[in-house]
Image (tube, rainbow, N blue to C red):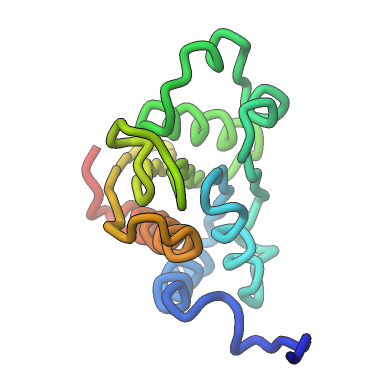
Length: 178
């Protein structure tokens, strides 16, 4: 088994087109993005960072996978955690607003989902569910969906990244609705 990798291996093929579209728009507009992601596990940030010129558009990102990390870095309290019922558009809205304020980016993309292979019984805890938000000066745009990939953890993570970047593109092109 080979341990070498090349740029042909990353980012995943499914992400490349939307990534190129979003990073091109951000560069042309001289705008910036920051990321708050949970179930995508850093895939959104690392995909952006794989793009030449990323330092001109990327303000930073957080992988807030655990509830304690959200207390440490996302402004959560013990009360927030006590009331936590899984990923929702309210959760990602809060993450996006907090990170955008702290990192002073034009846009912040927030993602929280259930990648699988296991999950819960409520719709937002079933594998494949993801809540997304993009916060900017015009407001916070949200979207939620289920990938229908079931417990395919890696497949869900990739789809979460694609959907997050797609929402960002829609916001950039003023196609998203508040």
